[in-house]
Amino acid sequence: MAVRIPEPIAANILEGAAGRGFDPAALLARAGLPRTDADLGAPDFVRLVRAVTLTLDDELAGLHDRPQRVGTHAIMASYLSRAETLGDAFARAVRFMDLADNSFRFSLGEGGANLRLDMARIPGRTVLNETAIEMVLVLVSRMLFWMAGTPGAINGAWFDYPAPAHSASYPAMFQRAPMHFNQRTSGLAIPRTLLKLPVIRSEAEAVAYARRTPLDAFLPQDGTTGLALEVYVAVESTLAAEGRLADMAETGAALGMPVHTLRRRLKRDGVEYSDIRRQVRRDMAVRLLTTTDLSIEQIAEKTGFSEASAFIRAFRSWTGLTPRAYRVSEF
Image (cartoon, rainbow, N blue to C red; front, top):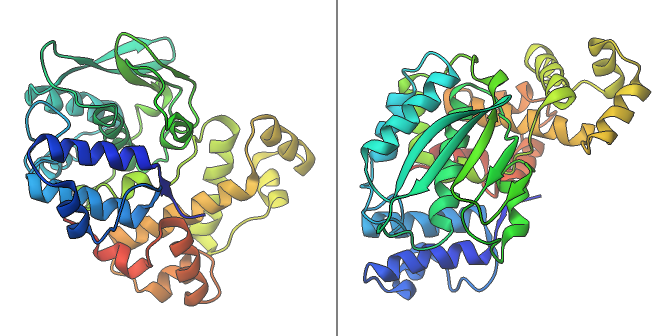
C-alpha cells in the first residue's frame, strides 16, 4: 500500500512558510499541488517539502527559530558516515545538532536497556508546531539506522505536547513504539543492543541519502526486534544469496523451530510473516537502487521478481514512485 502523509502535517509545513512571509498558494503551485485539504501521497508530500525548503533555503521548513540552510543535512550525513558504530553515530548526531544552537538542546542518556535521545526546547526559541519535532525525530533516526544497514527499532517515543489530531499516524512514523504525550521533553528510546552495529555506508552514499530526504524517511517501516528481527535476517540472507523469498517452513527450519511455533509466536507479537518478507524485499530494492549501478532488470532478479514489470509495479505500490524515478530523486 502506498504511503499517505496526513493532511495536518502538510498544513504545518505550509504554516512555517507563511510565517516567513511566503504565500502558501504559490508554494503549492510550485509543487504542482492544487490543495492540501486531503492526505498526500509520498511523492506529492516530497514535492511540497522541497518547494518549501528550496524557497525558504531552510531544511527545517521555517518551523524552528532560525533557518537550517540547504546542504546542512548532507554535511551531517558526511560527518555521521565517519563513525565506527551506530552508538558513535548517535553521539555524533547529537553533537552536530547542538552546534546549530537553534530551537532545541539534544542529549543522550541511559534508560535501562535503552539509549535515550532527548530534545528539550530552548526557552524563548520558536517551535512553530509539532511537525518541527516530528521531522527531526523521524529524519534523524531513520538516517542513523540506515547508516548501520538495519531497519532499526524504537522501544519508546515521547513528546512534549498533547496528542495531535493526526496522532493515529504516529505508529507508522515511530515503528509502533509505545508513546507518551505531554512529557517534559521529546525523544526516542533506542535498544542498546543495536549500538555496537558497525556503520557501513560510505560518505558518498550518506550524502546521496541526505539529498533524497525526505523521500527515504517516509517509507513505511515497522519495528523489527526480537523474533521478528531474527526472521528478517533469515529471509534477507536467503534473498541475498539465492534471489528468492524463503517460505515460513524454511525460515522456521533455519531458526530451529517448527513452522506452527513460528506462526504462533509471530502472531503473539502482532507481526505477519508476509509483512516481514515485503519489508526485506523493499529494503533490499532501495539499497540496490541507491548504492549500486545495477539495472532495474538486475535488481528485479536479485529481489526475487520473475519480471521487471512486476518489480516496477510492486515498488510503485511501496513508494509511489517507479524505481527509476526513485533512483534519481534528490535535491
